Length: 140
Image (cartoon, rainbow, N blue to C red):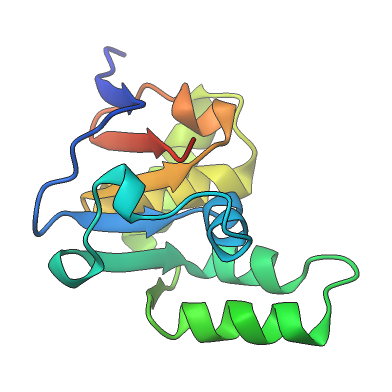
């Protein structure tokens, strides 16, 4: 299968672009390890999403403090949480059958593809994913 993906460290996010967060992108943003403005993202000009899988991963962190949980929940209120529907399920299955990605990463990638969103991540496995319609931006 021929794949085309945009692997980038300097992806220029255009106004109106959909942005999806993976788990590390949310955690590191809340820990102030990067900011959206440095990535060229103006929050008022983009739509922000994440997969229900990311929500579950972020909130199931071991030894999470009450304050961390509240910060995550508050941030998630500003995102559209995308459930797994049949379209996302089928795309995730397709990705999983052909790649070595773990199923949660396949669901996250499939969600960003279906939403036509740029996935913010620092996960090397996702950054290296070459798949039609998949776009990822390194948060570093």
